[in-house]
Length: 156
Image (cartoon, rainbow, N blue to C red; front, side, top):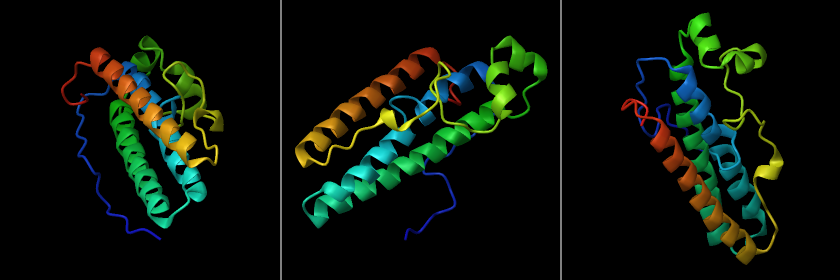
């Protein structure tokens, strides 16, 4: 179905673990305006598009969002690699750790798990495309908020 290049679209090389930053970044994986919702939104909406060109465009965008998921998951993985139990407790990562250890699991920064209510697919092309534009703006705002919080140049 797709050709998968076994490299990240954007390289991630984080050398210092940081549980606090990992919790913030996790929101772009499975938060309300994260990449998981984005990929599901486009890949679901494609079926109601009236022509093959629009359908193909939404498929391309949806698969691009899957690549973003991979980048975000890599960031979180590198931020949580080799954390000590003291660091996990100190930065409040212990609640996540109890359920998932350091595995990647989709949730918002506040701990709310991802669910299908995070994205919309109405079946009306105009409604869906306006939804997509609004969703991209919300995702941009979330990334801006993360960049205001995260000063580590390896992460930012």
